[in-house]
Amino acid sequence: MNIHEYQAKELLAKYGAPIAAGYAAFSVEEAVEAAKKLPGPLYVVKSQIHAGGRGKGKFKELGPDAKGGVRLAFNLDEVKAHAADMLGNTLVTIQTGEAGKQVNRLYVTDGADIAKEFYLALLVDRATGRVAFVVSTEGGMDIEEVAHSTPEKIHTFAVDPATGFMPHHGRAVAAALELTGDQAKQAAKVASSLYEAFLATDASQIEINPLAVTQQGNLLVLDAKVGFDGNALFRHKDIVELRDLTEEDAAEVEASEYDLAYIKLDGNIGCMVNGAGLAMATMDIIKLNGEFPANFLDVGGGASKEKVTAAFKIILKDPAVKGILVNIFGGIMKCDIIADGIVAAAKDVNLSVPLVVRLEGTNVQQGKDILAASGLAIVPADDLGDAARKIVAEVRKAA
Image: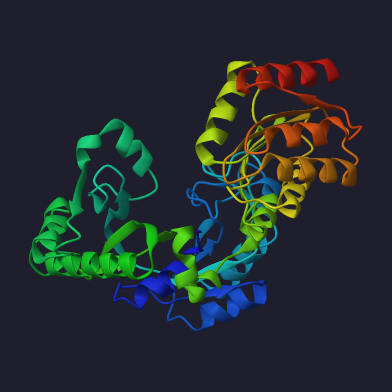
């Protein structure tokens, strides 16, 4: 789960991270009132969407010459004008894709005199199973280019969970940022506070870009991106309340309500599978046969008839879906339960696209009998390869 920048900063401030004053705004009037609470005379008006590259992004409605989603304002009139430009319009960045995202909220912050920008992030290092720091002197909007062109400028080290964050970790961060004296002490303190926040909130990512040194010599978190481990959210009801459903795909939100693991993709063949590994294999074999999956959907090991019906409806809400492949291996999951759900869903939604079903495992024959007796145009498959070939052929025939 991701949250907005202003939410991330408010959260990190609780753990001691240095944050500039700022306020969220949901209307032009609120943006102006937010600026009035700040000392000025420099303000920063920032679009709040779940995507990076906002500063270099472009608004669809404003034309190619318009400013991006992060703008400086030198008086209240400019704050008002920027807010009016941004709210309700669609911001396209390198991370949103061509569709972009509508800006529904802003963050108005106090301006800062920046002397230098750094990059500082905490991630889970899957190879070591530890929290890793990623540090670079080359902070700012082009960190991706730094990683590509000059990877030697990015330093990474992991923290042993048996010891936790130690003074030498703080010194390592300061050294990687080439800071000395009081600024080195500040860097160590910032790193320690971020590590504490990472563990306390079950975060999966904390990215500070940029971490700035001001002209006054102080370190300041100017932007923050924080994501959380969805499997641990049951421990953090306060964080769950920060979720912005308008930033998420509507079908994915609906799927989460039924405890379905669903991710929309760009293909034309809907997939319903039990088990993440089997789902990945199903998507791979569809591509191997020349078409592309429209989604990843794992119904889990103990899906009910109602859950399967919900899964079918979610898949069919995608207008790009031209056929559906159901691939079920019945271990804990029983094939007859799946078959009942398939028949109920197909009848309920008046299925009009080809459907290929491959069942194997517990109660497989009962499941096949239910499908055969349904009177529906369901194409049975003997194995995964057979299923992929059949759904690709059916989709191409229908086209």
